[in-house]
Image 1 (tube, rainbow, N blue to C red):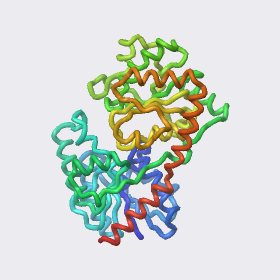
Image 2: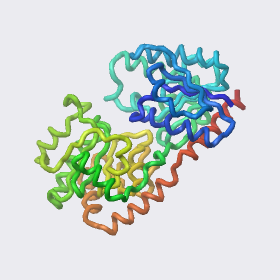
Image 3: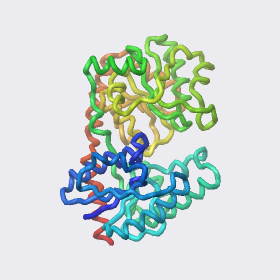
Length: 380
C-alpha cells in the first residue's frame, strides 16, 4: 500500500497537527512492514526530514509561505503530485482535504472550532476558507476524528452520514512518562525558575482555554493555602491584550494575585515531561477540545489533573481526573485545594491517571488508521 500524507505542518511540531503527523508516521511504519509512505511537504520543511526511515519517500514542493500558498498547496499542488506519484490514497491529517480529490482521500478533522465557536470564525477570508474545507470534507471518502465528541460535531455541522466518520483516538508521545530523576527535575526548575511546589497550567492563552477561570479559582486557593502553591502559567503570553487573547497578567493583578502567579514562558517539548512531573497538579478547564492531549500528557507523567466536564475531556479522563464545569470557579478551586493538601488523594489520582493514559497509544492509533486506509481502498 502506497499512501501519501500531507506534511504541511511537519516542521511545526508544537501544533496539534504537526505533533500528530510526527507521531503517526513512524507508528504506521512499525504497524505495517509493507506500507510505503510518501510525505509531501513544502520545500522549507525538507531540512526536518533527515532522520526519517528509508521507507518514507519525501517530496518537497516549492510554494509560497502564505495563506494563498497554503490553499494552493492543499487544493492544487498536492492532488496533482499524488496523481503523478500514483499513490493508492491520500491522507490529509488536518481539516483541509482537496475539494476535487483525484485519488481516494481521508481527512482527519481534529475539531470544528471555527464552526462551533463564534469568537473563532474570523473575517470574510477565514470564513470563506472554512466553507471551502467543509465542502471538501464532505467529498472525502472517509473522515477520521479524535473523539466521539468531535464526531457528533461533524455529523451535526457537516451533515455527513455516520458511516463516513470514524473515531481514532490520539495518544501522548512515548516520552511522556514520570520523571523521578532529581537532577533532571532540578534542571527544569532552574531553567524555568519554578518553585519547589506549584500548580501547573500549560496551554495557549486564547479565550477557549479559559485562563480567566483558573485565575478566579485561584482566589479561593490563596484564601485557603496562601502562597504555598503558586500557579505557574506556562506558555507564550499574548502579544496584546484582546478579548480573544486576554492577558493573564492584567487579570491576576486585578485579583491581587500578581505575587502568586508565575509566567515561565514557552516550555520546550523535551522539557515538558519533567515540568509535568515536578507539578503538584495540572489544571486544564478548557471550554472546548476536539481531543485535549495535554491532560493525557500530564496523566502519563503521573500528575493529578483537574479539567472540564465538557466536549471530549470526560471521554479522555474517565474517573482518573477531577471534572468540573468550566465556569464553576469555586469547584475548580476546591479541586485544586484538595489535591494540594491531601497526599493520599494525590497518590490515588496519580495511580488512576497513569492507568488511564496507558489506554492511549500510538500503536493503537496507527492500527485504527491502517484499518481506515484498507476500508477506503476496498470501498473505492
